[in-house]
View 1 (cartoon, rainbow, N blue to C red):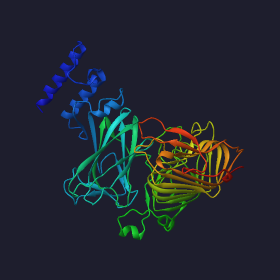
View 2 (cartoon, rainbow, N blue to C red):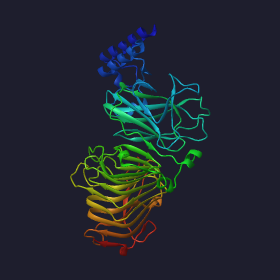
View 3 (cartoon, helix red, strand yellow):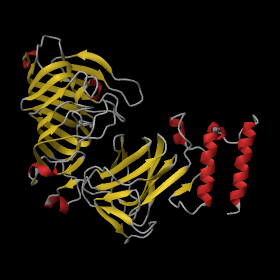
View 4 (tube, rainbow, N blue to C red):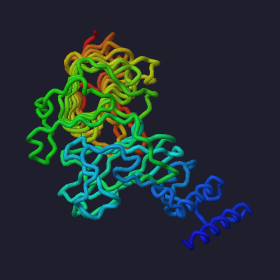
Length: 478
């Protein structure tokens, strides 16, 4: 405690020197601003005060996360959220397990061994900017147990929870994310049937943060595990897993819901989240892990980022998008296939979702999207389908199969494939309103790139090639 006055006097000397035109000793120019002095003072107060034990001071040297934005606040405050404390909202499993030593606080959280099981936290951020999110965990299993971490309304990142050697050996994994000023909700869901590792606590390092009240939370995951999954730790990726699962009633269809190995019949229910525009990073209306959803209407002002297939084989049957927001549906993460049967997707030229864009997005490698059963595109669109042009660790192949699809809409092109990554597009029985040769383009070939290496470049339309497996006889005017 005797070091506090010395530290405070040193900081004040640094500030006064900077005001006299002298160089501050810190390499960060932010240390000479009045707002920085306020943060430094609050850090000293946090060190000396016992009234706010959940907020601690870390190094006064600016962390690397501050380089993301020249206007970002100094990142020297850390909030720690333990299980059963403010800001810890819920876990699909146990929040008070104590049998494995080495944890901090009263206990640790042990999520169920199921894909889609997870934890929800909620915090208040005093300023928009980049923050480090840390998760203290133990993984005594034989393989990594990755988790999908999402800032609701923002971006999604993967925590690589590698093996720690024992359930009593704890370590921390960190990701860097952008948070908006105000309430931010975090979800961490397992990407495999092994579940998550044991979670000790979550930390948020950046500008001032505090626990939030856990309101307006996403719908809790609906996990339907078959008896074979209970006996085996391997992820199930066969389409039969979802189709053989018991049908979940329409009352379980919720905006923001997460469904694992489920056969979900929404019975024509209409639901949605929000649609602030067509910006990237919006949350999905539904997240599927090897599941089927059918007979659902996604409302015009709540499309967000549509439906995500995160793993296994997903089927979307008779889904109606009243007005697409970001995308209608995305095959991502570890999704192997997504089949769209029937239904329709409308996009207005000047609706909530902004300018016309793609309907379906495909991110995962070695995967297939199939669109069939008389699916209709209505209104105005940029593309029916696009293979990701600039994903992180981009590659392929990604495959598209169209059969019995109707484009009763204005559309820029049908498919955009990355020829350099081995993508394929197969088309049969495609009908397009007012179609003439070359308008719209049917199969455009691109050169995909790695994230941060510029933009994907278009090569042009192709017919009957290794990438574009389509003949002109397969396309006709509606």
